[in-house]
Each structure stands twice: as C-alpha cells, then as structure tokens.
Length: 85
Figure 1 (cartoon, rainbow, N blue to C red):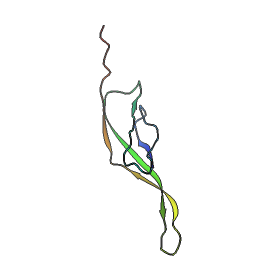
Figure 2: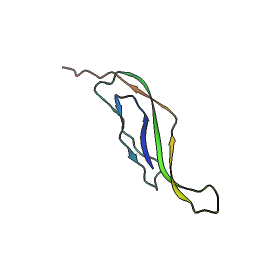
Figure 3: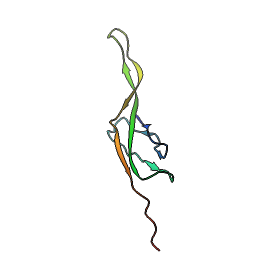
Figure 4: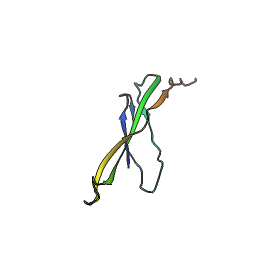
C-alpha cells in the first residue's frame, strides 16, 4: 500500500510512503515549508493498493487499483521560535 498526500495546502509537503504487506502502520513525515503561516490546517492522506477483485465468482480475480482516503486530520503549525542570543 502506498500512502499519499490527497489534500494538502501548498506550504505543507509529504512524500509518498510505502507500507509493507506484513505491516499495519507506517511513519509519515510532514514538512512545513519556510512560507507556511502558523495556524490549523486540514489534511487528508489516501491509501492506494492493488486488490484482487471480480464482479462475479465465475471469472478470475484481477488486481484492481483501489484508493481509500482517511478521515481528515488537523495539523497545527506553531510560530517559528526565535533563537536566543
């Protein structure tokens, strides 16, 4: 399964993450770009995988690409801390 950014603001980036077949969790890294303003953002991640499927039991199951979005998440971006002198 591949996890992908489905709906992200332009200032927040996420690379695709591959989830191995024998795993049920993965680490996802979100990167706030330098121009990202502090605040709350709604983001949606989607899972995409090949799944065997057939409309009836008479034909062999062929792999079909399935895309399933997760529930929206709220990401809070805090103001950048200034370095103390």
